[in-house]
Image 1: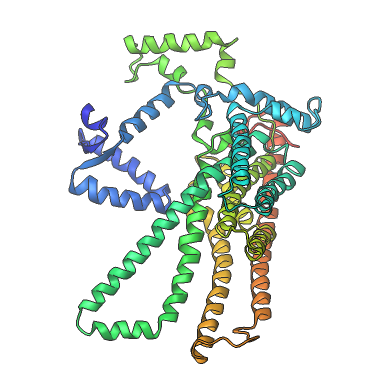
Image 2: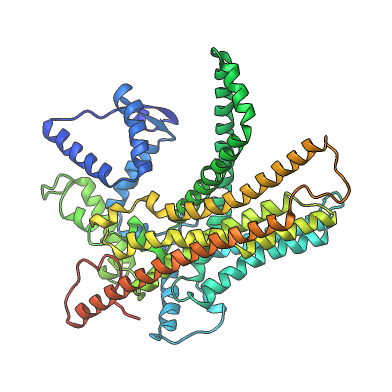
Length: 538
C-alpha cells in the first residue's frame, strides 16, 4: 500500500468499509460535504466516483498527491497554527513580519505613534516581497537594456515609453485605490504579493486555459463536421451550415466572450487570490481555525482517545516542549498578534487584495496585447497607444474583482465558518456577477469586430473585390459611438451594481460592529463573532 500511495503515477485500491457503522458514518460525512460543495466540487466528485470509485475500485495516484494530502492534514493536527502560518516560498513565519504590519495599522488607527512616508512600509515587508521587488527591478533593467541596445530587436524608444506607461498605469490604479484610501486596511506587503500572483500566476494560467479551450472547441467543431459529412444527407446539412455561417460565427464569438475569455479569466483571478496566504487575509484560510486544538489536545490523549500515551505521543510532547521553550511563555506559543481591524476594514482588505490580483493580470494582459502589435511604424505605435488607452479608461478586470469581493466578504466576514449561509455561497455565486460583466464587455467589442468584418465582406462582394478611392465600407463614426457607448454603459451598470451592494453590505457590517461593541462593553463573550476578528470599532 505504501508503494502504491507514494508512486509517481499509478492506482491505489479504494478503502473498504470496516463495518456497517463505519460505512454509515462515512456516508453521512460524505453527504454533508456534497451538500455544501460548489458546482465544480460536485462535478469532480461525480467523475471520480464514476470512473475510479465504482468501476475500477481504485483511485488514480499522481505524484503521491493523496499521500501528501493526508500527511498535510496530519501536520495540521500536530503542529500549532502559529507554526503553520508561513510564506510558501521563503518559509518565513508570519510572526516575523506581522507585528510590524500591525504596528503600522495601529498607528493609522490612532493607537500608536504614527510613522509617515513609504519607508516604514518597506521596512515591514517580508522576505518574499523584497525578493519580488528586487527580481522585478532586475528583470526590467535587463530586458530594457537588451531591447534598446540590441540592433536586431524590433524595439524602439517609443516602444519603451509605451512599456513604461503600461506598468505605470497599473501602479497608479493601485496607488489611488490602496495607498490613498485603504493602506490601513491592507499592507503594502500583501498588495505586492497579490499583484505578483495576478501577473505571474493568473495571467499565464488564463493564457494556457484559453488556448486549451479554443483548441478543444475547434477540435470538437472539426469532428462534428467530419461526422456530419459521413452520414446520409449530411451534405445538405453542411450546405445549410455554410449558407448560415454568420449565425454560427456570432454564436462562436459569444462563446469566446463568455466561456473562453470571461469564465476562464475570472476563475483564474479567483483561484490565484485564494492561493495567497497572508496575515492580513488569514481569516479567509484554514489557518484561522481555533488555536487551542492541535498539539495541546493530542498531548492529553493518544490517537485513540484512551488517555494513555505511547512512545510516539511522548516524542510529540518533547517536540512541543522544544517549541514552547523557544518562546517566552506558553501563551505566546499558542497566541498570535492581535488584529485591530473592524469588520468593514477586513472587508475593504478583501476588496483591495482581489483588485490587486486583477490589476496584476490586467498589466500582464496589456503587455501581451500591446507588444504583440509592436513594431517601428507609426501605425503600430498608434495602435499600441489606442489599446493602452482603452484598457486604462475601462478597467474591467478591477471592477470584476470588486464584484467578486461582495459575495466573498459575505461568505467569510459576514457569516461564521460553521453557519448555513457560509456554506451556501460557493465559487459559482462569487464569480457569477464578474463573469456577466466581463462577458458583456467582451461581447460588445467582439460584436463590433463582427459588424466591421461583415460590412467589409459585403462591400467587397458587391464591388467584385475592388475598393474605390475614398469609399467607406461602414460608418466608422457610428461604429466608434456604439463601441464607446456600449462599453461605457456596461462599466456604469457594473459600478452601480457594486455601489448598491457595497452600501448594503457596509450597513450590515456596521451593525455587526455595533453589536460586538455592545457585547464587549458589557464584558461578555461573543462566540458567534470571535471567529472573525477582535472586537474593535473604528
